[in-house]
Length: 135
Image 1: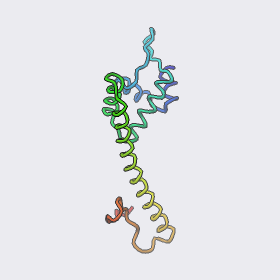
Image 2 (image 1 turned 90 degrees about the horizontal axis):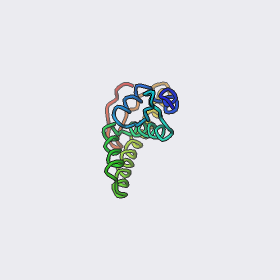
Image 3 (image 1 turned 60 degrees about the vertical axis):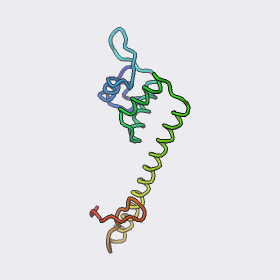
């Protein structure tokens, strides 16, 4: 598939796709007409890259992991270590999201109750009190 169809399939902009190609994260086949052609594996790869970024990995980190995996080989122990590290990061993000969710629910309840009394404050960590920002 050409870049326009690839963009639709991945939800990425053409500029982002070109950037990923330039960084070596995607490897389309270059045809005789010099057009880049992407396949289903590249679609999956692009989506994985975007999700990895959403989880906090930088493109540099993604490229380093990719290089280690594809060019230097990666032991099962190393693969498992990388996955455990990501799970730890995800667990931290989940806790932050839960804290934000609790805050929003308290804020909604306070608003619906007529905004009486002090507004709830965001406590990013249980037991830690942070002053209100007025949000």
